[in-house]
Length: 307
Image (cartoon, rainbow, N blue to C red; front, side, top):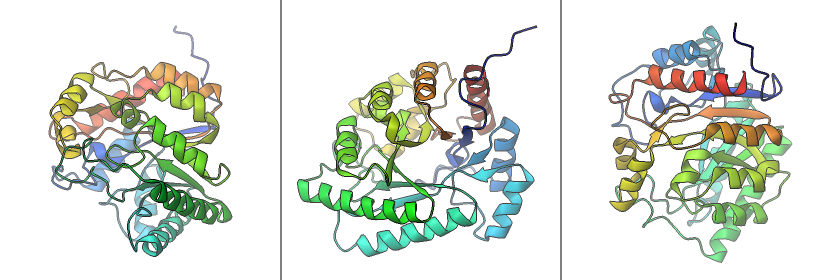
């Protein structure tokens, strides 16, 4: 009989979730083969996940949403809220949208708020993702940091955690950008979401980020990269949409992926990290069977972590 692996993390200290982007895409509605949310929820549960991030197909009625999730033993890991502090006349709307998302996650019994600055972002546009991403000037950095500090204080006062998501095509994309943002924001109110795939796509090393900012991590997205597809996407100046269709992203545990998730998970355990670890692979479900891939990821994570 195979000896049971000692858990890498303290049992109960981490939660494994998954995003609905394996079943459909929330940014690009054409990447969708018509899978209903009920099927996605059932497959998430069948694969062994504890929760999922919010998706645009989910019921708007919170009682229906709670029922459908609870029926399958799932809960919401986080909502996404876009911020627009670096463009004109969007501060009030950004704060209002954040408060609405905060009310939603509180009602769902969650704790984590995920935000990313999309002012001037290239990631939803049909253009070269990297060449057209914004490079913030000093006043824009100050507006972003001030706005995030305000949102972070709102979240903290409500017992919630604001987690900033660095993202391809945005002004906070690279590890250098993360360093600047972390230096300008309040450590007690603004945490970092580490997305392993986005940081790799940006040309940086997730292990270096963990070493520098492990103490600021509030949320983790586990996303793998197919290196040949990524290199082709960068060389050809693909948009984010086209890079997804080209197969840049996949899940942990996929032999076609290039990230060393065993090393990443061990580095997170050494902090020790506590909170959500959410599998995310933005793939076209017509090309990558959702249940097959999310189960592949969960089986791999169970093997590496013992959980």
